[in-house]
Length: 220
Image (tube, rainbow, N blue to C red; front, side):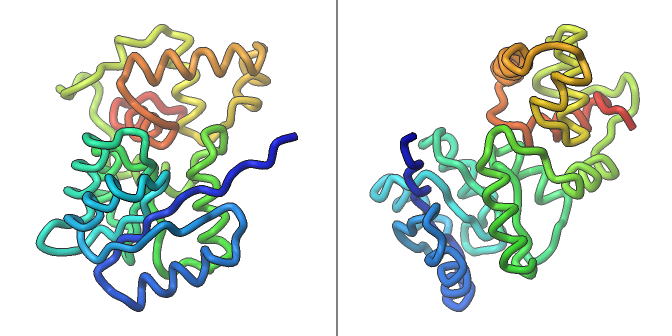
């Protein structure tokens, strides 16, 4: 069995002490390798081109270019890079914007270090369950009334089975659990997931959860 290579990580925060704290959490972990640090959104964009990180830990509130705008630029230029937002406040408006720009999710800076690391690993695991707390916050803020006008991809682009799977993803179920509930194979669920993400031009389960909640494709 081949051992998985560590994730190459770029830390982006305009506060040196914050970068130092993040580094101190990641350095002891064999599954993360820090390739560099940036103190601004502009520097983050430049270093993504120079250092080829796989993961960017991005502070939301920086100036002159904040983390949200930097995320949009990085995802446009380097689509394969995964971005996780860092914030002291779980403001759902900022979170939803980050997801729309292509971020994987977010981490609160004041979380317990072990919980912080476990959540980061979960966000980088394509088959992990979406955090229930994230889905709940999105649901409360961005649920759209039936028939409301929305821009971008539409739920009508999905088949009834794909909508059903999307609803299960939004409530935090992984592929195995969805397969058990629908009495189909896990491989079939994976194929449906690939088709769903391609149809909606989304990249991951967190973005799909945001889409499901915005368009009312939930089981609440």
